Image (cartoon, chains in turn blue, cyan):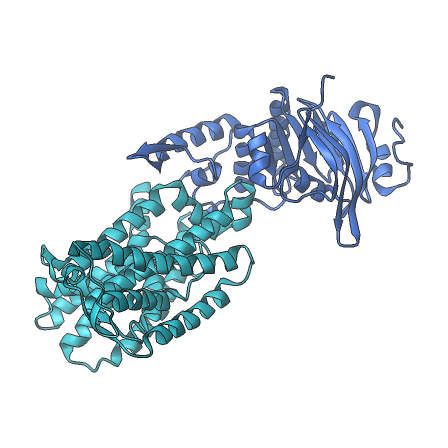
Length: 254
Length: 331
């Protein structure tokens, strides 16, 4: 593999005396799908927030495209090309689908030098993106509060597929989705990765990890307890890494 | 339900307060003698200009999910600052500028700056120090009014410079220029809220602040701007108030805050944030003013106004809940 997209080097995070992350090191390549697994409280979400600019690490460093990288805000991470889909949905339910899709990145045209929202252009883009992904939403002008949980999650998934960037972080993205929508979501992830975008997906469902990931990274008690290629391991071996029955870095098993 | 009726119903729901205003005007025109006159309608608009301008700033901050209780006191302080400098009797210093028209921009800028500064102070404490907007602006409501009393010594300034007074006297199509200023403010800020990224971001911040932060919107910056705008707009309201009363008294504008609140809520703005539009707020302001005028014309004691305003706010909140249920059925 050529130079990795993102390298984490001994990243730690303390909350007061509590060490949430004790030194995480791993890397993600371009076009690679990495599944991040671990028990509740292992530090997965903390790690995602550090990469996406929601939290600052206590120590350690990150290299993004070979350059020293630290996002102080989600805006900085976004500018660098890192998209995140959070566990609790990041939608504003009081505005419509189009406004959510373009949140913070609205298309504007200048009227007398003042930026004015170009609603028609934005609606056309959303319509196309949703149609491509096969998501059906009755009206793009309905406020999101009137949509179902599945429709909301679909909007969020379509949003990251559309904006792409260079690296996508997904924190349990399928929690509210049905079987068919989950399958489509996993397809979307492969499709995104095939464009050369790195993907990190956090999930609790072993089957999903094995369906979609190239590599599986297990975090336990704030350290990397395993980092193996999918085709060199098995669900049972991974479960052992998560619960701690196998020594860290035990590699191929089963 | 076919799309046509659905659209029509949504249109009615979105503009409910305008229909209420229309209804009230029709009812008053039929049942109250002398109500149906152009002069009366002009008076309704004229009487609501100060309240209207103040409500804009309050609505901006509430839509963004916060609160500004200080607008009334800020308006009073701005009015007092203009009064002290440009009034010729009472505690007025009677400052003269040449040419005379120069007093207009200077006094206006002074009022906006006083308001904007207090707004920035409020915004800084709320956003950066992360204190509750309710408490911070309640404190400002008290200390700014106190400052008005301190700098005026409890006395008043009278006889505002004629060059500034001119805005309250000169009429265009039956309305004084001050009323046109209020209308223009509503038009400009309605456009900003509905058509620009800044306005869209404020609405979204009011809806889900975390989501907007994650989406890379500069939440803190936008919120501070909203507080500064609310302050500056309150300053403008104070300038209009000074013109209207041709000076300033220490208790100028007392009680306006609650009317502004009533107007904002009646206008369909949710105190939870993220919901409401400025045209609705203007309809709310006009509705209050229409009812006041009716009370005057019927010769009822003015004390009834407050009872009716209170009931109206209650009705508005109930109506809002009712609208929510209908909308849920529509979706």
